[in-house]
Image (cartoon, rainbow, N blue to C red):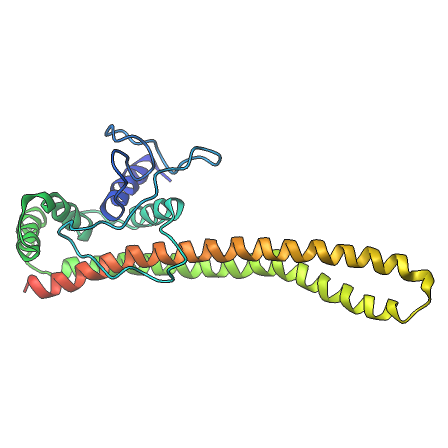
Length: 241
């Protein structure tokens, strides 16, 4: 991804994810110069992001499933998706940036949205609120399209990693039933297959748990991003008439 998209991606990430004290969303100390892109594999674990509280923007109900979590790598991924789909000229992105800058001024939520809208109108030279809702929905659409692609990759991963092991498990179980009815001479083969079945059981449990947790983290992160955008859309529709 071009450097400009990376920069926008990090900026967008800050709109949706708030780090624990003193860190940026990438896990880098808040120096104003976050490292480009997501943390490399094997790097120290970044601070776990949390859903913003009392930011002045929408505060959606915590997403489910509860067993998932907002994952830093997916948060960075979604920020990059939004950056890649950021069109030229002012749109919902710039509106949300202005809205966030007003969070610390002690204004009511309605006043914050109205002030952000006034600033956006001057910047964009338009009085059409649909400019915000339309582009916000385009961002939701981009994230949804990415989610669909991710779902297909999960299905492929399950088929490759778990499906193959399950097929082998069924085959060996059937073979053992047959071998058990044969002469004692083949007992050694049965024992070998049984040992393999034990190993497969552990592999299935491990791989299934990894894939399920990864999918749950993705879903929660997806819901976290889209809920905030949809919440903003609802407030835009409510306050900016």
